[in-house]
Image (cartoon, rainbow, N blue to C red; front, top):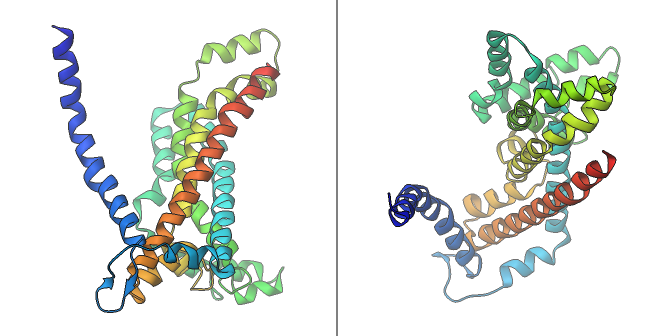
Length: 293
């Protein structure tokens, strides 16, 4: 077969995914960016001409800047909690010998992904409410638990905890995939040469699993930054995060340019954090672990 025909075949195989990405990803993003530069019109929702006023009013308002900060720290907390929970689970799954047992445990881990987010949110409202299971168990020890964990004092923490429950399976899948690619002969060689199991884990297993950890971090962070259902239902409107403001501007105020501008700013913030985290993991952490060897 000639090289030219191979290249043509590759382009044909890439054509469906390319068209899908352009139609469902690139075009909507360009439309959102275009609307964000338009003024608001009370009759048509999107006015004529172009302006930067939509970005200026959000970047100059401390209230909206606080919402961006709240969205960021809650997403970072969700990401950290998800990775801390996911790594031991993925490590245990990787070390499970029986195939049937591994499949059963994997199915249990994937259960949150099989349920609707709305169903999960209502289930957690029952658990965290004033008459819920958690309040009943903790009220003898912690009297303040009688009021439940959906009030203003606990709303942000409750939202983070529920998002960890919902998004941690994504981290488990990525970390488990990375651990399954670790060559067992490397672990045996480390143990044979006198390294303790703890040293083998930190010097061999953990560095080789970092690509999966990084993938899990990026996926969970992106999901947490754009989370809408859990802040709405679990937070009960008391947690001012950017996705809720986007919903308010787009569906309640019909200020589509304002909602689009918030969406663009949220996307820029998410991409900036993803870029920084990727650089830190790839250069600093992997470099430090290489030196530590």
